[in-house]
Amino acid sequence: MQSQPADGVTNPIVTPRYRTFVLAMLVVVYVFNFLDRQIVTILAEPIKLELGLSDTQIGLMTGLAFAIFYTVLGIPIARLADRANRVSIISVALVVWSGMTAACGMAQNFLQMLLARIGVGIGEAGCSPPAHSLIADYFPPDKRASALSIYALGIPIGSILGLLAGGWIAEIYGWRAAFFIVGIPGILLAVVFKMMVREPIRGMSDNNTSGTATEQPPLGETLRALLSKRTMVHLAMGGALTSFVGYGLGQWMPAFFMRIHGMGIAETATYFGLVLGVASAIGTFLGGNLADRFRDWDMRVYAWLPAAGVLVAFPFYVVAMLADNPYVAIAILVVPSLLNSLWLGPAFGTIQNLAPTRMRALASAVLLFVLNIIGLGFGPFLVGVFSDLLIPFAGDDSLRWAILLATVAYFWAGAHFLLAARDLKAELEAAAQHQ
Image (tube, rainbow, N blue to C red; front, top):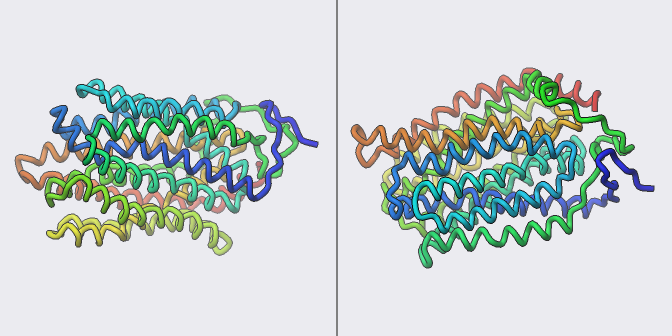
């Protein structure tokens, strides 16, 4: 007999095949999330030229303004996802961000483009918190970092497709057509997702299948409970500073190779998509899988692995940015592109294991709030500001030095990951006893 939980959802019969199918559908949704988010990266130069924008405006449009709405709205949407149907929330969000991506192709000035990108951010706020919560219900604690690292493959895959689709479509048909072509299919995907994915009961993979999950606690109590865990605070800050570098470089690296090395938009898209994107995907996959594999040796590997990744990545970025040959630089960038992606699965998996059942979507939203305000919000924006400020001193090389300045944040990120390791084992063991 199937159980009926408090939020009115019948517990589905979950086979390993269906569980894998649900994860695959969530990955596809996340691919569209990052495709629509990152396509503006490769289109920044033609948009700048046609609309007459500065680097600061590009950084504001792609970073800070987007991130403010994305992160602030993520909290109430996650709060809703901790008590309502998560599949429906993701489906509606997908329609919104896909439609607003298409609307970017109609922008005639900076304000219109800014508002369209804000619309994308509003829609995308409804993706990851409910998705993380779904994964935590479909996968047991010792498999969550691996499952979440597979889900996080949507980041590099979506970025790859955004670069390739944006670059080649813009080369042939112009940047406006690129927004239309990548935005509209997401609306169709939303219908398929709603029809094919079933909502599970809360705590299904924590042996809490009775349908008697505890009531959602007040927001203030939830936030205090989450922020009282030092592991969560340090993982959030480490992830935020890693994202600061990742988003900053991800936004401005293509522009750097086009400006400094004279590469074309399609060529840049191809190298960054196929070479660096694949390296990032490998790192994302390895992070969660390695952490889950070695957790029995020492649970602190969930923090040690991200720390090692960002600290070792730094010198490779320095050498690559100072290289004269663009193809040598891209070859060197393969290594840090892999290393700086190791943190995703371990960090998000640990957060889901630390959070009580009815706080999981909000826990994910809190983490995303911190890392996206600092990373997505200020990464692209401050690199653009630094680039403009350095023009009187560095001339055409201002963007090179702005990017290098941003990578210094990896040392701060590494320190937070190492601090997270101190309490990680004890806090995970305590959380497991109270699920």
